[in-house]
Structures are given as structure tokens and as C-alpha cells.
Image (cartoon, rainbow, N blue to C red; front, side, top):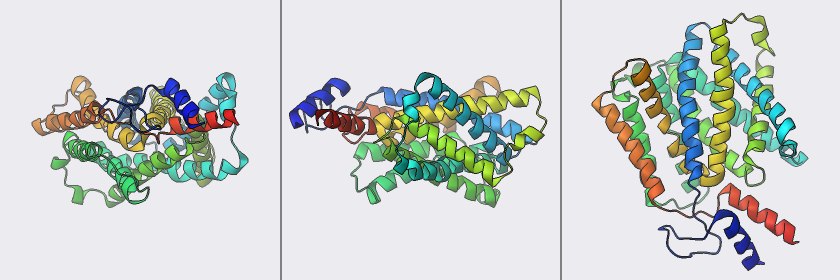
Length: 341
């Protein structure tokens, strides 16, 4: 059965190679698909615009509570309609897994959304991004300490390089972090923790379910949570301008539904540590947008930070790592075993 399983997995994921791309290693290893990096890069582009859009809405008087309720509700609703129309099978889950999705939605998605939005409503977007992108370090720490995984030197170096590069690219050296709003700093740190928690436990769920199933139910329970914590459908009683509705729609669909779905797709293929490192492209893209469209200048250290982040990502991809623990491979193996019984 082991030979049959390996042959089937090889046909699905490609030939087995070692970390340097040459020759066969263990029967269960396979080269990590490069498209996983593409998915999270697209997500980073969409998130970069979303953060600035949210800051605009906060400046116009919309609260973080209102925005998080709307973005989650609209995202969950649109995804539900799409799945019913196109892929209803993805809505099926085991009754015993409802508790898992509830926790993932509330502790993960609901807190990721709120803590980040609350942070940028209290402190500068640059500082908020910096704090949130401590997440790759937290994910790597979890992998080593709790999951008992041995990360390669390349991955650890990429974590350090991406974190340091993020610090430079957002201009954090110009920020007096200790003088910032304390509630904003605490919320920013919590956003990093919740982001890391969501990535790690979302990866765990994808060992049994496809990414968009995990994504929908995390959105659903997050939306239900925020419609219980604050008055349900609170936005109905508010008057928003056409521009504000456009930005709300963008944040819900192109800032939440699609990028978080792509992020899970990337974790499905390259795992949470690599995906979170690649997501540090977001502040680089945000800085580039500000430079091109808002006339903001980029300092030498910011450019250096961007180079450091990109170099870290290139380093990750130059090493043709193998990983038999990607959710996509685990699900495929389970399906083949099930079919053979």
C-alpha cells in the first residue's frame, strides 16, 4: 500500500526531491509548490490597500466595531452564496468539528479582524503593520517549541530578515513606540498573536478540510460573534456616503474574503511559517502605493528594509524544500488510503 500511495501522491504533487532539488529522499516528501507563494503575494497586495481604506473610514467617524461587523458579515454572506452556487460540497462538515470551527472563527478570525482594525484606529498604520508582522516570529516559535518541528536555517534566517526588513520599511525607527497609545500597542501585539494562532490552527483544520471550507466557517462564526457582542446589524441604522460604502465593500470582499482565502490556500501548500513570512510583502506594497499615488517619499532605510524582505523571500524559494506535512498532501494521502480500503 505504501508504494501505491507514494505513486499516487507523486502523480498529484510532482516527483520527490530533496531540499536541494536533486534525487529522491524519503517516500513521503515532495517539493513545495511555488504557486503557494503567489497566492499569499496577491493577498498581500489586497491587504495593503485595505489598511489605508480602513484608516480613511475611521477618520470619517466609523468605529472599529462597526467596520469589523460589516466586513465579516458581508464576506461570509458573499462566500456562502458563491459556495451554494458553485461548490456546495465544500459546505459539508462533520458535526464533531463544529466546536473547532467556532473556536477558529472567534479566537482566530474575529480577533484578527478586530485587533488589527482597533490598532490602526489608535496608532499609525505603519506601527500597526509592524506589530502585526511579529506574527511570523510567533509562528516559528510555536513550530519549534510546541509542535516540536525542526525549522531549517534558511527558514529561520528568512523569519529574522523579514521581521527586520518590515521594521525598516514601515519607518519604525522614526516612531517613538513608547509614546504611542498604550491600548493601540497592546491591541497590535494581540493582532500578531491572533494572526499567528489563526494561521497555525487554520493549517490544522486544512488537514481534514479544503481551504475554502475552513475559510467560510471561520468567517461565519466570526460574523455571528460580532453580531452578538454588539447590537446585530448595527450598520443598518447608520448613514454612510457612497464613497464609504465603496470602501466598506472593498474591505469586505477584496480586503477580507479573497485575501484570507488566498492566504489559507497558500498555507495549504507551503504551510503557515512560509506563508506568514511571504505576507510581510504587505508593508512594502503599501509603501510603494503611497510613493506612486500619494507622493510620499521613501527613505534609504525603508528601501533597505524592502530589499531585506524581498531577499528573505527569494532565499526561501531558492532552497527547494520538501515538506510532507503540508495540509494538501496530508488530505490527499488520507483520501487515497480511504479509497484503497
